Length: 367
Image 1 (cartoon, rainbow, N blue to C red):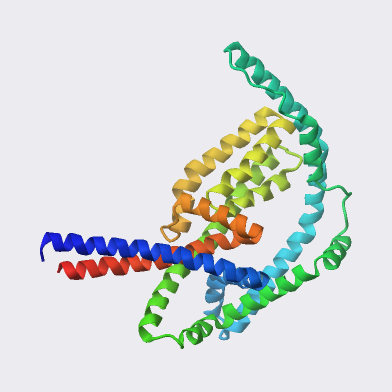
Image 2: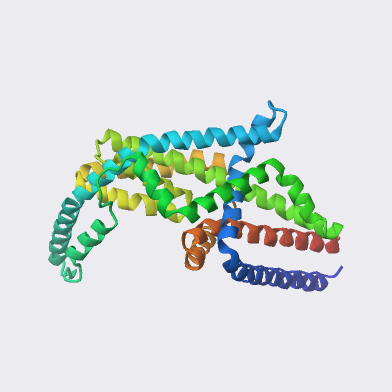
């Protein structure tokens, strides 16, 4: 075949790729519009899918030793529910006490930060650089910080449960619905997928199975990988804060779990913690925490932990992650953030599969 013909065919497939991408985003927009009418149910089902990917491997492992898959799923659920119940029973009182300690440290934080700004202003003034301080309203900053901190004394576990039960009936209902969805997905998800494919043609079924395979790889890598990485980072920083004798070490360590959101979660979690440690305890402790964090994340995590856990399965460009999270937050708040990456995984899986088909067709034509 002539080179000009190959170039023409290649151009046609590039245009086809662009059309697929545009169609994918159009479908995404239509999907978001439809979801808005039954958003709570869709959110519950989406969370159930994420739980399914998180627990799939433990269930598969346990099923090797237990004949019935339902029993394996039930045991996994009992284990994790019991673990979290015990953890909450022990952690909530400590967390609330440390939150109150952090609240009492806020005036010190604002005062030390104010002194830092004054010192920085004096240093810059020596080089004829003007940094206006008038726009910083210390009183508003302090009032805002107090407004987002707990206002009551340490409650008992019983009072916390009564508050949740009295004010969160719908939330509890959707949590139960999510658990039911995830349970049946883990027990009989494959059969449900096969039933879903029945109305479609054999050719379309093959395409959908391949796309689902790619989606499974991406979401499984995301759920397990980000959870493990965030947990390890939170553990390292919690130990660091405890060694440094930071009075609210547990709270700051739990904040680091925001790293489960790739790209933006890392520094969103750590920077506020670094400021709090530096301006409520001492700058030296803040520098030590910063050094530990940089050493762990830049050398250990990025070079040894993340490649081993994630591999190449996630395959998201950082810019795509940031845009999807921003769009998800704008459209659905916290729920939108939760759904952003699964939807991004679905879109990229569809696009990648169509790109592979297009490349395959070009190769066949070239032969």
